[in-house]
Amino acid sequence: MGVVTKRSSMTLFSDGQDHYSHRVRIVLSEKGVTADLVDVDPKHKPGELADLNPYNSLPTLVDRDLALYESKVIMEYLDERFPHPPLLPVYPVARAQSRLWMYRLERDWAPLVDTVLHSKSKDSVAKARKSLKDSLLAIGPIFTEMPYFMSEEFTIVDCCLAPILWRLPMMEIDLGKGRQVEPLLSYQKRLFERDGFRKSLTEIERDMSSHV
Image 1: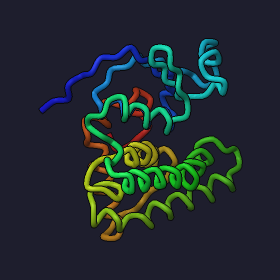
Image 2: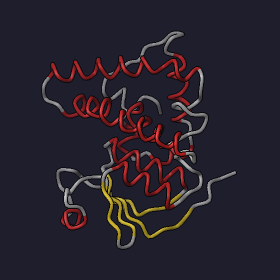
Image 3: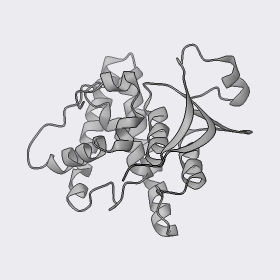
């Protein structure tokens, strides 16, 4: 059964290669929501972006008179605005746990990704690369229990993790092979085969990974 496309008058200002923008595009794709996508070069941002967003940051979502920034705020708004399929659990405890995982991912892993991709210090990049790989391998066993991140269903946490996993080849991080890493590789494959994920990819993102 195909996803029913939901029309809207939304506009997403998105960086076509940034993992923060990618998470929002995954949510839109998973929801089957059509938004006008403005592909922005972060070095040459349009003047209207600063008018909409005091931080002049990406991604920025405009929905009629509402302008939202910060990827997690945008993702949760979309989940509430288009409730099906739900990406946050219904029950308060599970919902809070999902938000905690997003917070930890934001604090622990996202900065490492940013360092690997943008730092000019070779030493900093090498340390961040090792830390990120070690962290990912450490969570591998959880996927022997559940198909998605601490969940039986695809959630908003997976939307945050998928863009990082997709960028591993570009970051020169090889998870290796073998029995220990197999659950993590299987999880990765499940994510990348999702129709919503495939549709979320920009042209640049399709070219950045050996997963295609």
